[in-house]
Length: 636
Image (cartoon, rainbow, N blue to C red):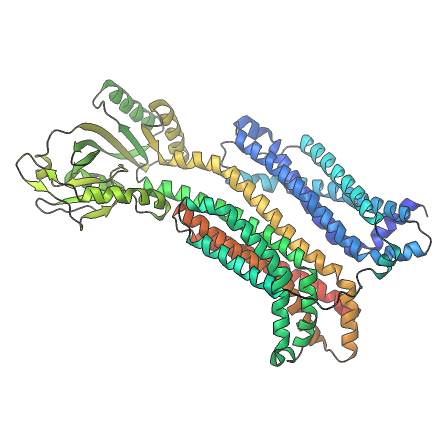
């Protein structure tokens, strides 16, 4: 048997350990390859969506860098569990140089198979992923399947280089290992885990302080508080797992009524060691998962905020506004163009028109005043409630009432109070005063500043306006959505983006801009989250051999299968969900701070993201627990 055959057989003999490493590497390669397929897709180049391709390329770079550390960490965990085997090989006459060569060949073999397998799976699922991307990215043309020659070459070379560098790095680490340490492997006595009361208290204070600041800052202050809060919470998280968690377990062990209850003793006896040993892994998983929660939650919340805000705040399909020079030839030409374009696409509409007159009151700006009949005509077209006014009564209308426009509403509050306090002097000597009870929120008239609605009789006695604009609105009654989007785009270009508004086209254009960002964010978030789960899986299986021996010894003194399953389930659940629970709390606080920054209610969006991740983690835990328990039971 040659040395290469020996290395190959070693991989087969350790296939149980290497399976997780291989599958994780394969998944990472597949994700990177998927991004490469998008980055080189000819349709994206034809669509000239440069930001989409740029986003995919940047994301591919992030995933590649993250993959390097992920694979390096995974490989380090496996070598830790195989040190005893390496020690035995050295005792049998193998030199350390040969051990390093064996590990190098093993890693390169697995890396090559994972790279080829990841590319193959990426090709297999490419069509489905392309179809999903068509929906999310919102582009005009389809993303057909093509043979991604460039993506294959880039992925193959990139990951072969990655595994080559990691293989060299691993062999350098093995150079420092001594035979005695190898033989002892991971069974060296660690002593009773200790924790500092001061550091444990400091961890709680740092986390509590970071949370309190995060949920209480508002508006632009959120951005200023971001960096110090992230730093404080990160340090607090590290101290929580290395100190506070161990301290908490020791406190629980002192409660005899709990410690001596059935199999609880088995759980707590080992838990402090597990928490101390896995503290850095837990810290890493918590931070990575928090980044995933926050990134996806922020992107999903922003998309809902922007798209929902545009749809909610624009009740008319098309809106043409003439600023200043009304009744001009340009206005007539534009109206003629709009009518002919709508007819050409056979779009049936209902419309309304209003001349918007602005008056100089005792404020520093001109204020719009419209008659009640015009307001109600627009209200009927938009399907909103009409307004009733008594004699000599006036109503102040404010535009911002949706949660998505909290920042704008906040800025408008001061102006609304000034408008309420103003007086409208009529030419017949009468005065109109709004008062405190006459403010309503309405999108009926497309005017973003507060304005007045007065009776038609009072409107006849207003002084000469200082400025007059005009607004035309249309709502479709029979039209295809794609035609409405097409018409909106054409008219915005020909009439002018500042004068003509088309809500369906605005949503489509925003979807084109935001879709790739959301798509990239989702991919990166999922990669981070799956990697975080894999870290826990690797740590669990690193201790598998020692756990087998431990439970085998306990079983001999009378531990039943039911009790064994109960102990394993509790231990695995604590190890699996402790960092995820911390990450979920971090994520909930971060998303709350983000919502405060936008002065918007994003509870539904944040809750959806966090619950979705929790469900995925529960499924992941059930699978891992089943496989892990089966391994332990087979040994017992």
